Length: 80
Ligand SMILES: [Zn+2]
Image (cartoon, rainbow, N blue to C red; front, side):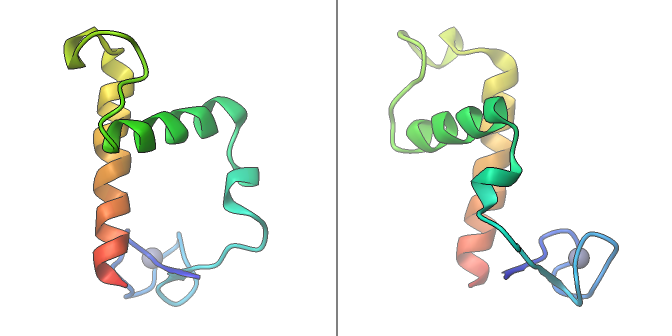
C-alpha cells in the first residue's frame, strides 16, 4: 500500500481512501517494455546511462519518462 501521489491521500478515483493498494507484484502489472524503462531510469538515477555517450545521446522520450518517474519515486520516498 502506497500513498496516492495523485490526491496526496485525500482519496480519488485512482486509489482507495488515499492509498494505492497492490494485490500482486508491481513489476508484474507493467508491460515488459515499461518495466525495462523503469529499470533503465533506476540506472540513470545511479549515474549509468542506458546508451553510450552523454545525456543528449539518450532517447528524448526516455529522458522525459525518467524525469517523471524519478520525480514520482522521490515524492513517494519522502512521503513515507
Ligand atoms: Zn488518490
